[in-house]
Length: 220
Image (cartoon, rainbow, N blue to C red; front, top):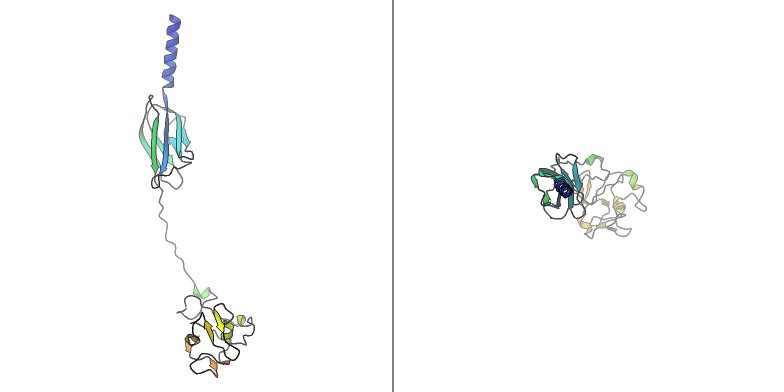
């Protein structure tokens, strides 16, 4: 009889020791999309020894051997705001199950200013109206165009989108526009017809009157 009493006492004592801890489980989701978050750090605060884990690919976590009573857990994840859940009641009768939503962390960054120095742009033109698809020539570049004969109009004909006429004329067509719509300028001054022996009401002629050493900007 004494032996039976001793066995029952040891059994009850073992149950009492086992009942001093419990398991906390749960799932971590994104607050906006409700998608599970893998790799989230979950830690029980002020626990000795430290109790914690990370969520699996389904956002699920499990922490064993948590002491009975009230506790707090901290959830942290990269690019998300840290969250602390307080007053979690841990009892011996049932595992604690939590569903926690994390909110993305928002950072206010300083404004970025992008500036442009026209003076260092080799392709800058002196025509302020030509914002895109403009091109200027310099003296060195004029030596690279075969058959240009020092004529800025014939030099421009080497670029895509520009079509020149025959050798007797040097007016050009830019992207399908009429040659009469061409505007020629020298240092910002408009030149009505930049050719010797130019045809009436035309911008073309057999001999150019513009030196290739000038900066010439053809625009349409």
